[in-house]
Image (tube, rainbow, N blue to C red):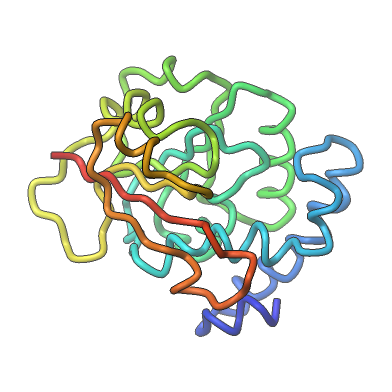
Length: 210
């Protein structure tokens, strides 16, 4: 938690407790249903919580916004974001039901009330729209954009810092992937946001709805 407080402050007492107990909850559930590499658990707050909160350094999820987490896995990036932005609504989607069971149990135990889940594949999300989609290391950018763009409603007047598009966290050399996607995303180098070596060659991409 000290690592999180190095970059983020002004938590309410409830948020402080929720963030503090996350590791314990994930360790417990991960022994029953493996959703996080066990070798990552020693670096839980660095590899999962702080990495997820990269998104919060550039975007503000205001009250009433609806966000879909595409291929949420064990709940990242949306579980930490839901704690930080309790008045936004996060809808977590994954094709593996047991991962959603972990998300639901952890959200319930931590008192995170602004999370819903759906057992589905990305292409099955129809007849519902969101203000933004978030994703972490799920698929190539072109596929993510193809799956998500019809699910993102276009906001006529966008406030500065409020997302209206696809935000994804990725690593490695992305030049070819971006070229093949036919997207023109904004790209941030995470190691220029957080100083930890873990974030070298990790990026946040944002493709806005046109």
